[in-house]
Image (cartoon, rainbow, N blue to C red; front, side, top):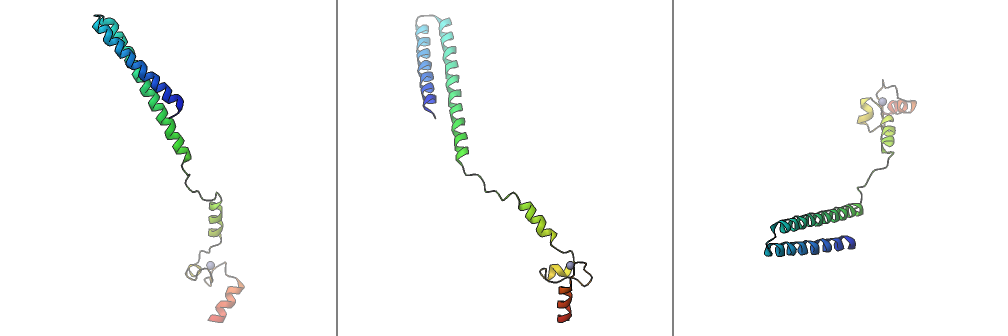
Length: 122
Ligand SMILES: [Zn+2]
């Protein structure tokens, strides 16, 4: 709560107490109309103090929210990296079962290096 908010709340509190006291004095001097007017004014001052209190609490909550560390975000080009990695994969089953070291004999991405390797092994 700022210093200004505390000062305003103190002023509202003093005004409320004073208006309530004046209302009680009006009742003692048999002036119910004036007492009602002062009670109504005291109520307005009390509502103003409550709103000032709420406003200060909202400002404090916003300040705390601003100081909190932001959630960690991934690099913005993560989607591009994932697309590039997926583009390098092959659709044949052997490529997936051999961790990307070999292709099916009918695969279109089979190169002469994988052909040679298959010939040596089999
Ligand atoms: Zn393949």
